[in-house]
Length: 294
Image 1 (cartoon, helix red, strand yellow):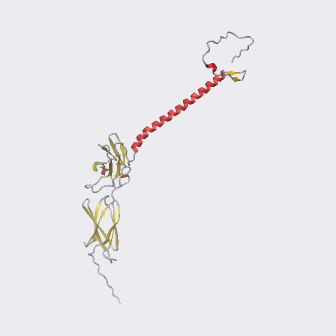
Image 2: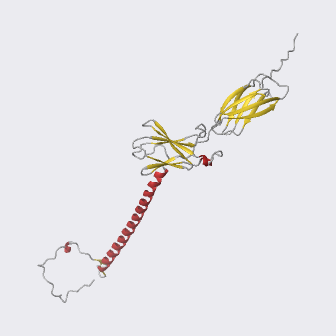
């Protein structure tokens, strides 16, 4: 024996298992189940989205007969905080959850260039990779002094660089650059952090040393060029001296060449000393001694 029991649907029950499936910068996909299994008619849900930062509300209506409902909430703001409430259209019991959208990315290629009495922070425009970012929003810069254990807000700018002065020698600093926070600092971008170490020596332990490398290259390249030019001139001088010595030796050898002997005649070196003042002067030649003229 058996008996069939049909439960009476209770439309006062709340939606079940409300949760977030995926969250982006400007949207969130949520999912829930109907208050009871296998609805036999379309059910109207009210999805209320409360912006906890702007203090505004929006209500969306979803009509479906499915037991499992998936819905995408759009036109949200990056880094926003929202409270989502889902209930049947007859204002039954509700299910709720909180959603935090993904903040804007951190600026890329943050680097430091050291000047005489200050430093310059440089970074790439965030608008190059974030379509939701407008340059008019700007960036804000913070600095952390590890020696003093103090974090300071340096200011904001709509440019892609920022000048920092009055740094103390021997202090280590960490700089952060991010999309400017909105609405009392509650909607911020992800920060790009850079460590500036040992100010006294001007060394930057983690920054891209593009500016400093450029300065070094500006000195090294001309020096190398001058060295190459000097070496080239030296080779030319040595070559010219070698040719001149070779020509002088050839001329000297030709001037001492004896056609009668078929060879060049050089002194032994003993005759190159001081002249002997006591040597008799040659006054003439004998007729029977042939005279050789080179």
